[in-house]
Image (cartoon, rainbow, N blue to C red; front, side, top):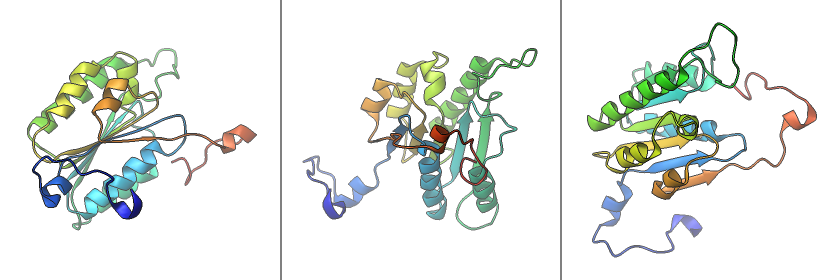
Length: 200
């Protein structure tokens, strides 16, 4: 796509303007860093365009404070751009179990997905970030066939970006835009832990 020009334009009867306004389903997957960061960058563009934004974070704890959340919440409350809504589903990082503090992550993920379905049905927002959403699908907490059906049939011009490793093939097939983040090198390879301002 040199200079942003598509290599092929389908003979579908749509004008350039109509084609440019089609809703996009994006998937950011792969083992590399930056999947959520790229999605939040898209959310910033949506906010600037005046589109109401909602973020659903799966398997990230309500105690986990990420910089993007603080920035987007502040922008949403600024009176400029568009409102921003943020939801966190579950205790977070479900592979870290603390005895006596387990929650029903599957039920909380299902509850989050039920709310997403309701929001899409009534066109509550224009831009959706479903952060780490590939995991509850991979773990069997949410049915991939239902996800595909709901996202495929969503009304209006609602844009959705899904992040997380190991995206289901069915989701990849449905998506308009798929980016796979690959790891070439990471500070953790040298024994360094995550740091504020870089990872959160």
